[in-house]
Length: 278
Image (tube, rainbow, N blue to C red; front, side, top):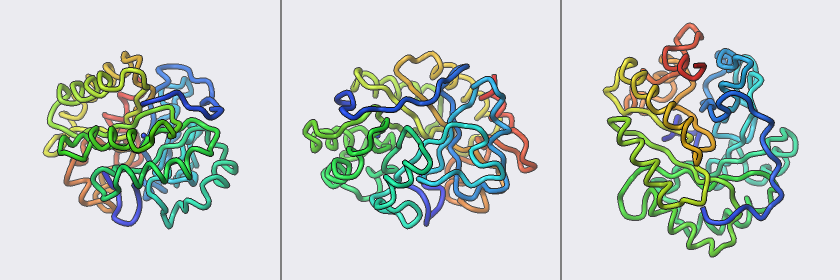
């Protein structure tokens, strides 16, 4: 999913690069915030309870999260969401990583539905992502079952890599009508790639799901993901407020509704956000 038309955008072998680990985690250690570019009024520390319940944050970019309190004490994960972004130029990737010190990188946002071929993505990855001696995720794919999309695109990407793409995680997105659909998709991906850790950087029910629907869904999803040893980290969509979501990403808000937002319009933690702290 894109959260803006102008902004926004991961199997195989153990990374051959020397990977710097994430900072030590306590609590569930898997939960993070998907933080859109328009979130400057909000404070991510509202979801940092000091016990590590939520300890990760990414903003689709290789610059620090726009917010009233920086990363809010959370561990920032950089993302090179497109081949070469105006907001995150590929030429600045290594310099930004060194400047900010992020030790994990997400790559390409939904290339399977955005016109990027697996072959182009593989060549780009080998040239630009391999050199980084940090943890790396392969491009984030959708749950589409259309030929050439979703996990099929990912398989083609890995084939095009010919063993030369060094990475630590595969990256999944999922939007659907039920928790069962989500669970089946994640389990199917694990069955297809049993030797690789999974990160899920976007997931929610689709509209017309209400906040009550999303709360029921996330209660099941969080329990499942916390208990799945093959899931390394996950990020509900989306860590913003209903009004900011609607004003800045009308298409996204129409697609999933505003019931999955982790904040209320007054900046407090929503009913869905509170689940991340339990």
